[in-house]
Length: 176
Image 1 (tube, rainbow, N blue to C red):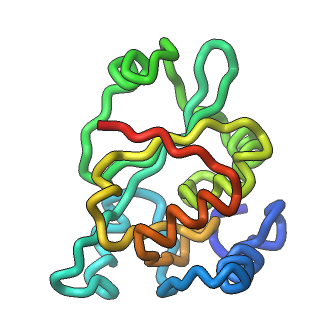
Image 2 (image 1 turned 45 degrees about the horizontal axis):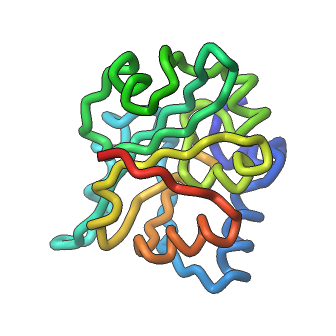
């Protein structure tokens, strides 16, 4: 199975259910559908279709990581930011980091590879996933993210993303 909305009903929480929850909480978003995006390069190829000129937007890449003590982390960064896992582990104070498996990703964040997103913390908080976000998000007007599937993108105001984290009880640790 891929990470598109075609298979969303096999996830612990479907993309449709997440969007309905955002609606219920009064957290507005713009929804865009597109071909499945698996990489930052894929995203860059289509983002021009729905970017608003002059909008102070943060487009992200997301890393699901584990340390040697089997603790899980979701790290959300500005999509062009270079990252060294060894340096990141030292910065987070957790030692060596490695990518988590597809099975653990589904178990801990309720998503498949290619759809990793800060919105997956709706599942991650229940599984003790620690969340780190690029401090660049603090200055963004809007943030572009997948809503648990990789053939959809939601655009939310930064303040609404923070309200989402508050609603689900997710602590955001900012990365400089």
